[in-house]
Image (cartoon, rainbow, N blue to C red; front, side, top):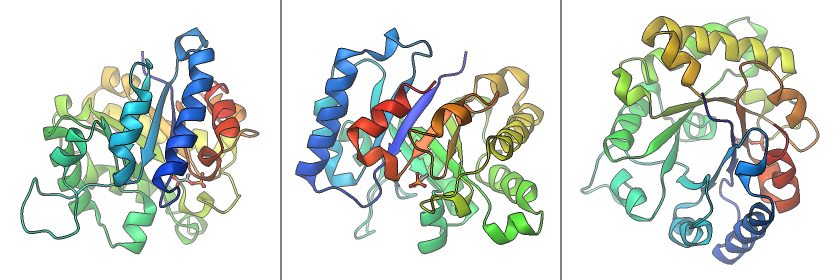
Length: 257
Ligand code: PEP
């Protein structure tokens, strides 16, 4: 059965001390109410800035179902790429997951599907699980191109893989117009895109793999709307930005399944 997940994307927020405090508070709440005692037994991932990975990995140690991930990685394993961080480095820092293709990476740093495919490949080769983000802009939705855009992102970013590699993929559907705007996709909008994504995975890799793939929703998801979104048949949890920076709010989201 596919895993339900609540993942927090801290983006470029939190000093190291602030990040340790936030993760510590959430982990305390989870210690008192372990994930496996919740009906959905969800997983929790903290996507932190690179420099936090080592310390947050220590904080989550021993807590079942809680993981740490990076927000990006470079497409080469090592070498003369000043300022970049590789998948082996991320793994060595204690992280198990990496975000690839967040719309802020696509739009602010010009990351295109071919580059993202290379990043996903190197991440998986180095033992990381990938949360691969896809989603359309407002203009694309208004022009009724949203299904085509997401299909192309998945085909070029992921559908070149073999089945074994694809088993390391979690997908996050994040409509760009909903990220950080306070505007959330309606449960119906999220539900229909997630259903399409699962259908595309099924056509490419077969029904069993599609049924086992976790598909998250992201875009102004918070402690008030999470429950309704997570109730959609093909929505397996959320990738949460702003609301993951407050321990109480994020813990409420974790309990929303
Ligand atoms: C995100 O950054 O992935 C995100 C969904 O942000 P927010 O929840 O703030 O919209």
